Image (cartoon, rainbow, N blue to C red; front, side, top):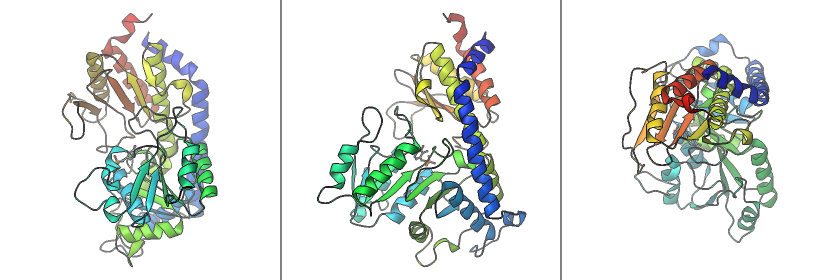
Length: 411
Ligand SMILES: *Cc1c(COP(=O)(O)O)cnc(C)c1O
């Protein structure tokens, strides 16, 4: 019965899967080309100590990343602690004091509110150096609000910077396609050619055949581009001029990018990049499979299968606290690490409700590895994400269905 429903779902998903196979191959080809053009060799996997001057491996890694992201230059550092850190560096390195920034995808991801100064805390925010922040929401159909963008850009004091968040985070909106981002960037530049576009690219990498064409973007190595092998780090990719500015912020003005150790991580960062198109593809297939099976069982899912060619986070409305717990327990039990642990709801800073989190990952907090989390509140939405390989997703899905007792009451 379980095997049948999964097979039935897979048959329905065949076209989506074929498309994702194509996406992964195009992306891997771009990665391989970058490694060939920049003559990656085993000598690049050595590393040094102290300041890290003339680290050829670090330099090769950054050139390869720039080529893969389609930008002039890039910084790729294991000492960048998270996606938030990378995006904070991007913002504070690029945005000048007393300027104006406009987010055109609504409020930024939660953890960036302090960077913008939306939420006050210790540490200099953009607001503290006189940067004015505004945001406009996406339209009801989840697209850019072009008329409003136009009227703001053509106003007396237009913004100097535009900020875009590509992926959904944990909201119910769909992610924004590369085509739409490229289009809005052109639209912005036509209205105000010196406006700089910054992108939160977390969770976006390798979900489509190319990366968006923006002035600068940033992301986390323990999400998509690390391919499950990078143990930490972040990247920032953009124009030569902006990357130089960010590098000066990252270390010190006058020192910039020429220092900073790789701590022996060059090999796993690059091997992870090599695997990333495949890993991201399998995670996207997994999200589609969960979405398809649960909608066949009568649940509301977001995004809907027919609305998405590729996403990493699959939200499912489980409608019952008990089912939610069973779902998360089954994911935990199906994990390679800490499978014996039982996840329990607990209070979390920044959330009004208790939160349950199931994950058993090789890299702590890695969200390209399989996990499920949920706030304990109606209608009991669970956010399922990741999975390093498709077989793992299938096995976990079977465990989830059995433990939830799902198939007994089908039709
Ligand atoms: C995960 C994420 C971030 C922050 O990355 P962390 O590594 O969790 O700090 C920012 N934006 C988006 C869209 C994300 O998904």
